[in-house]
Length: 273
Image (tube, rainbow, N blue to C red; front, top):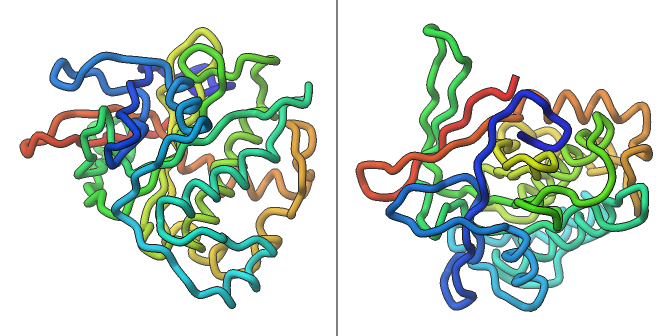
């Protein structure tokens, strides 16, 4: 269950590969016997914060500096997709805060994979009925961000789950996606894995496609999200709440993984509501 949601089932996070490998973090939730043992993603987060690298081979770094400056005051200083993804994660995550003052979650970026196995296909189901549609998409050009609290299974250790806190997490995921689409030209999809509610296991992810946010990526960031330096669950401006909900709630899914015929992974997304 995602933090602050009460209707979702959960799956535990998985172990991160060594820093020398091309990927350093896998999304929570994949436990086939082929691919090793489970772990708490908090350890992956700590490894990154202590200097581990992030492998990201599927995206290309956009270098149009002029348009970046016009879109927001911030622009990446690093070169290459992997360092830029890490800069985006650091930039966004440090301003989202708990009411007590601590950082809401850490954010780990990486190529979309599970247990160091690449995801080949994203299958999105439109609903739980016999009349549902399944949209199958090549996963190339997909970037993931794991939003990880430092509690068990990446849950947020402090405070209580609430509607306001969940909206803040969704706003953070949205901001990560907007920066990624703006500054990483090869990224076509962003998957943001959400922290679970305390005592449960992660199962929720926000799934953004570039075309979903095309207008927001072109117009200045401040037209979508105010450039606030610090946000707690109570700090989202009233006039911004409806927009955040409109851009994120339809893109909230329950995720699971299956092994594909190629031996890689298929990510299955079912509507969260």
